[in-house]
Length: 375
Image (cartoon, rainbow, N blue to C red):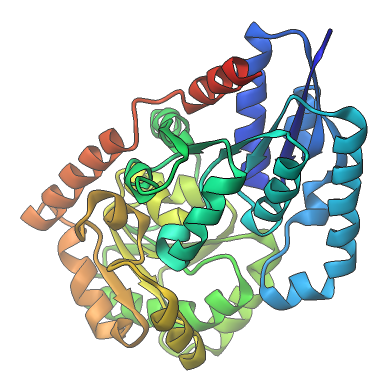
């Protein structure tokens, strides 16, 4: 009799990580009927999806509220499917707003809940930890410190390693793609992917770049942004009076730009970890509205914003946030990272140590084995 597995991935990253796990799982278990929510990657691995991630991947509290009736409908569809198909286990991947509520309902139905990629409760809401212990049977985490976060509760937690380690190690060794650099020293400017991020962050980066260019005419700058944001970036550049002269904008290709750059300014988020694993000396930046700053200061419970610093438990990547995103400060911070200096050498050494802390690779195999053992 076939085993039945429910898989929930609501974002592109979850679809990718989930597909890697299912591929490994199928190598040892051919008796699986797998269904749930996901995207093209999961469908390629033979997963039946009730809804695509393009419908599910939304950003912001307001957008979620606006589409609440749709999400409620999807939620009820998944539960109806679980009642009908009675899965042996559920693999929930990240996507905490949906998946933690779903875990609670699945647990009531006696369905085993396996959770991959831990919600960042250690940063925002440690009060959720006891509840998670009640509704999750096994938690598979991608950061080593997350195991200790759950030490005080009765929950089996496995550190499986970070999936980006294998991915970016291979990418680092790949052949470089052509990019419009036009200078000896290459500096990447990554202002984020969201409209509000770019609005607040890009202009100070442009001003810092101009300051650097005034003293170093051999510099070249590239701004990689999602294709849907090209118009916004071009609009900002046209209005800017302090942008560097030697600047190019490319659609996508952020990883390629980071791989080739001598140094980078990167907006807080996953891209800062990508920069570290690509061994690109980086200054982490972030700026938002004053209301956003006040909100973050009230909620955040960790000394650093960057995940590289959190994992290393020290500031291995300088953070310049809000008022510290002054162009003069930014230029002074990145200047020693562009050349053969003790600061650059120390950062690269710390990045190599960080890579080791994030695991020895093959997290998908470990997660697949845990699932196989569980069902």
